[in-house]
Length: 529
Image 1: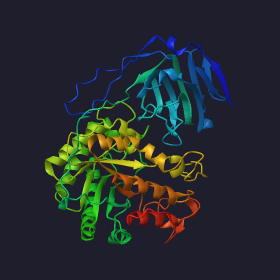
Image 2: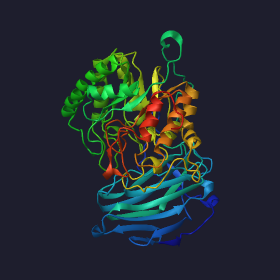
Image 3: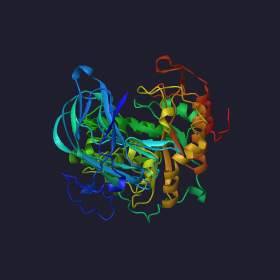
C-alpha cells in the first residue's frame, strides 16, 4: 500500500523556477569526427507540485525532504517514492533530463545488480509496449550531498507516461533527497548525432552478386573444440561468434592488465584453431571481445574503462594485438569491438568514442577486415535512435534482440513466468518485433549500413519459443541481416540441445521445436513446423 502526499500542486506551465545543476563543467570541444557527449545543461526548470506516493514503510516526507531509511536488519528491502510527470513536460521530446541533491549513508550492496539507490525514470509507450527504467549512477556506503543526474533517450518512442522513482531497492541504508532541488526538462539526452550525411560503402561482393546472409550461433565461453565447429557445420551454420569472455557478472575484475593480456593470448590461441577449423568448413567467425580491461564497476555495472584511461588505453591496445595476429585471415567475419556497452551517465571515454578509437587502431594494422560496432543500451534496438555511424567504410553495425524480455527472459534472475508467443492480448507478434527494430531499420536505410544480429533467443521453457525464433529469423531474412543465435553449448536455458520446464529440470534433447526452428533458419526455411 502507498500513502499519497500532495506537495504544492501547480500546473506544469507554472513550473518556472530555475534550478542550478552543480558540479557541472563546460563541454569539451569535440573532435571533427566524434560523438560529442553533451555536458549538464546548467539550469533545468524546477519540478514543483508533484504528487508523491510513498511506500508503506521506511519512507517519510518532511516538508521538501524525502528520507528513505531501511534498517540493516530489513536487508534486502524496497522503499521507493513515486510521482508522475505532467505529460506536457515530455510530450514530443527526444529525451528527458533531471537532477536532485541527495546524500546517503550505510548503503549496502544490493541483492541484484540493477537494484540499490534509485533516482530513476520509468517511461512507457502504451501503443507499442515499449518502456525503460533509466537510473542514475548507483552509490554504495556513504556519500556527502551531491547532485544526482539522470538522463534518458526515448529511442524514438513517444512515451505516454513518465514516473519518477526515488528511494532504495533490494538494499538497506539511508538516503535523503532534497526535493526543493528536483529539476527536469525535455532534452536530447546524453548524446548528439554526428556524421548524419555518411553512407557506408563495402567492398564489392565476389562475382558481383549480393551474398546470401550468414547465420549461426554464439560459441561457448569455454575453449571451443573442433567437434563444436563440426556440429554447427553439420546443422548448416555458416558463421559463429567467438566469445573472448570470462567472469561476466563479476565487478571490478580484469584489472591486472598483465594478467589480462596473458588471458587474452590464451583465448587467441584457441581462436587460431577455431579459424582453421571453420575456414576448412566454409564458415566465418566473429571475434567478440566480450570482457574488456578493467571489467565493470561494482556500484552499477558500467564499464570501468569509461572513466579510467588505463583501461581505455588497454582496450585499444588489445585490439591492436588482435588485428596484428589475424590480419588477412579469410575466416574472420569481423572484429566485434565491445559486447553490450551500456553508458548510464556522462563519462570521460564514452562508449562510441572508445569504439571509434579501437576501429582506427585496427584499420592502421588491418585495413580490410570489417569492424563491428555495437549500440548503447547493451546493444539495444532502441539505442539506434541515437547511434551515429563511424565516418569509416566497411563497418558492420550489430544489434541484440531480446524483446520483450518479459517473454524471452521469463524465469531468469527471478522474473515471472507464464508468458507466451504470440500473445494477441499484448500485441506480441512479428509486427511487434518489426516495430521494436524500427530504429535499426531506419539507421540501416539512412546510412546504407550492413546489420548483424549478434544475439537473439528465447528461454527454453517459454511457451511458443519456437514461434518467437521463427518470427525473428523471418524478419532478419526479410532485411538481409546476418545473425547468430544465443547460444550454443553455453547455458542449458538457451541451449537447443536441452529442454525442460525450468532451469533445475533441463535434460538433453536431440529434437525439439526450438531446435527445429533454428535448423530451418539455417536452411533458409522459416515455414511453420
